[in-house]
Image (cartoon, rainbow, N blue to C red; front, top):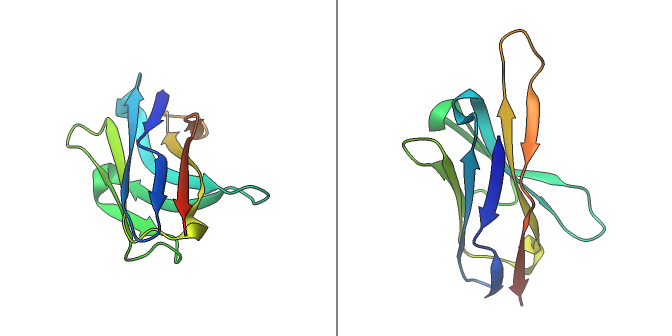
Length: 120
């Protein structure tokens, strides 16, 4: 599975951005997809996760009510709609996919990351 993010950039506080993550390869094996972020000097943290084709979504408390995670009907593209952005949302955002193969431990795949900078 290969993942490629896009949509990052510079935005003023209060603005919006939409991140995309395009998955290719054995996408039918993807069990869940998620967005993580990592700010300078901080650990990578889970922002939002979508499971089972979109039926279950979970969010970090810091983004609840502002961010929305979704996947297209085919399931090959994941999105993160980010509204009411704050300076503390500034980070590199990473796309993650978990693949489950019968009889094997789950495998994690990562994109290269896309920078989101929110100016105050």
